[in-house]
Image 1: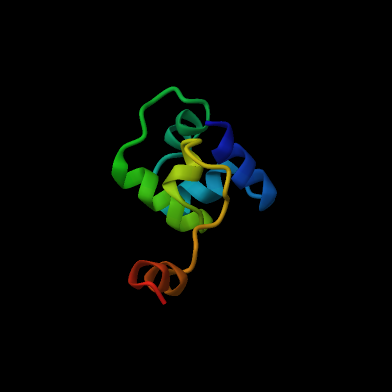
Image 2: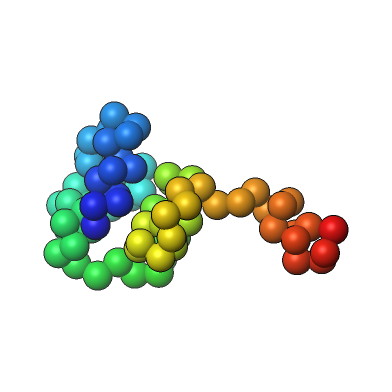
Length: 80
């Protein structure tokens, strides 16, 4: 998962810090970054929240790094 490494390094963080914040082991976080384990929906959501990005960005479904603010999405959905 190169995106996870990119997001982490952009913030000048080490794996240990993020693992502690997420309540997981540093080893597991390392596995996530190197694609040695499958990311569950729960951990993907926690990572997206932590990095203020979308799951789609983390898993390469989009190159848009930040999600739209909820107010913009809501206005588009109702046609405002």
